[in-house]
Structures are given as C-alpha cells and as structure tokens.
Amino acid sequence: ATHGSVVRATLFPGDGIGPEISASVKQVFDAAGVPIEWEEHEVGKEVDPRTGSFITFDSMESVRRNGIGLKGPMTTPIGKGFRSLNLTLRKELGLYANVRPCMSIPGYKTRYDNVNLVTIRENTEGEYSGLEHQVVKGVVESIKIITRHASLRVAEYAFHYAKTNNRQRVSAIHKANIMKKTDGLFLKCCREVAEKYPDIVYEEVVIDNCCMMLVRNPSLFDVLVMPNLYGDIISDLCAGLIGGLGLTPSCNIGDKGLCLAEAVHGTAPTIAGQNKANPTALLLSSVMMLRHLGMNEQAERIHKSILKTIQEAKYLTGDLGGHSTTSDYTKAVCDNL
Ligand code: NAD
Image (cartoon, rainbow, N blue to C red; front, side):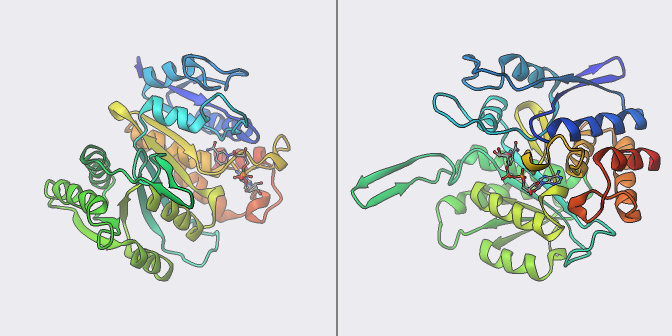
C-alpha cells in the first residue's frame, strides 16, 4: 500500500504486553526514519457478525487493502459462538505459509552459536484440517488432507524465499516412507518446484532424522519446508535452539503476497503493563515485514542495532537475565541505529 513514498501498514497492538512492545516498534521505526504510516486496529469488544470473531471487518479490510501488517499477541477469548482470533486471520487472509527465521544471537549464550535457518510451515491443511470423528465407540479417526494446490503453493514460496534471501538449500521434511500418499504428494510437488530453481540445492529429510540432525548440529540446515503438523513442532524446536520464543520472529504469507508479521510468543499477562517485556521478537518481526516490502536498508540497520544492543548487554530485559525496562532497552536500540 504505497502512498506517495510512504507505505501504509496495519498494526494490531494486541493484548497484555502487546501495546508496550508495539510502542517499542513504533519508536524504533521513528528513530530509523522508516517511511511507514501505521493504521492501528484494536480487537473488538464484541463479535463482529461479518467475521464471526472479535476481529472486526474493518480490521480485515485494512490488512487486505494494505497487504502488509504487524500483529502483537492477542488473548484468545474463551467461550462459544465465535471463531478464534488466529483462525479468523488465517482463514480470512488466506495465510498459507508461516515463516520463522531462527538465528543465534551473538552475546546471548545458548547451546549453539551457529544457528541460521528458516522454517516454512504449510498452514492450511494436513493433520490440522479439523476432520475428526468417531467411527464406532472406542475407535476415532482423524483425516489428513494434502492437496497438490496447497503443497505447490508453499513449496513455491519456500524456493522464492530461498532465492530472494540468498539461501543455498531447501530441505523438504516428510515421512513419505510411511505416509506414502499424503507426504508422497507433498514431496512430488516440492520436486516439481525445485526443478525451476537449479541454483538452489534441494534435499528430502525424514522428520525423525531431521530432529536428530537439528539437535546435534543445526548448521546442517538452511531453509526447511514442511506440512502443517511437522512445521508446528519443528518450528518450536528451532526456536528453542536459539533461546526460546521471546526472541523468535515470524511472518505469515497470504493471498496475493500479503504479509502479516507477528512475534511467536503470547501476551505474557503476568508482566503486562509493568514495562518489563522484551520487545525483541516483535522488533525482529517488524524487520521481516520491512524485508518483505523490499526496505532492506532500513531492515538491516534496525536488525544490526538490535543485535548490538543485546551483545553489549548493558540494557537487557529480565527474560535475558538483565534488569532493564522495555523503554530503556528500546532507547538503547534507537541510540545504536
Ligand atoms: P506467553 O508466551 O504469553 O508466556 C510464556 C512465558 O514467556 C511467560 O513466562 C511470559 O512472561 C514469558 N514471555 C513471553 N513473551 C515475553 C516477552 N516478550 N518478554 C518477556 N517475557 C516473555 O504464553 P502463555 O502464557 O501460554 O499465553 C498467555 C496468553 O497469550 C494466552 O491468552 C494465549 O492464548 C495467548 N497467546 C497468544 C498468541 C498469539 O496471539 N500469537 C500466541 C501464544 C499465546
């Protein structure tokens, strides 16, 4: 959504620590002079009949119109008669791929120093198609759907991502030795797309072997693409390799190249409103958003300044073992720009 030279982007500050970490992103973008104009949207207080959820129709329209957005964590309301917030966003915006880069953060010590991989998860079908029923008492069935359409779409995105982000290899993760038809079709689609990208190495790795390789030596991987359930599990495993959900950004890719970036963590209710939250994951998500828009220079500057602030270790929030507030950390990131 370009408006002059300024790009309009939708911002959902979200709940809990959401508003605090969103404020941090706004502050850093201002300091870096990023030409983004935010359209802020709160989650509604009641169900909007047009979306069947607390997310309003106007909010949906805003993301569709802008094609780009950033989302803070949202509290999942409990009750009957409406769709969950994340499900609504996924369905309404056709968010078919979830992308999570996992990179070691210099200065923040974890078991590995050399993690630099990206997981790309198919987000619409597979084991999470929601088709479960009881056959007879004591016997239930869950149906895994794999389609050529959705598999090609996510494979295309994985190779496109690899190419545009200077990555060398794509690994398709599967269990086609057992699930010959479903995972077999997923692999067939990945192979078809791989042929169009001769410069990118393509390999297939069985999920169980993939887990062992990841925990022994994560640098064996570059870009991983996989069906829904495997992606759900492997992407959290990878977040664990670099220090947990508080540092992990993500973005969701939808219809017509739409991109909705979001931190992986939740609303952290116990520290909400206390200026204690670590805004790094949302900041890194906003960097993904900028890269998606092709604003690589600003993305790089902000990214480097976040890494520098963490490496200097003078202004770290509690979750990283420091004593700084969200605002002090944010100020340090701005000063390092
Ligand atoms: P959580 O991620 O909110 O918290 C897990 C732990 O990590 C807590 O100790 C929390 O204090 C800490 N933490 C998380 N983010 C942090 C940050 N940025 N800085 C410092 N510490 C951080 O997970 P939860 O407690 O299971 O869920 C709380 C709420 O969040 C629930 O209502 C859940 O539905 C919601 N949730 C939303 C999303 C989303 O909108 N994408 C994702 C997960 C959970």
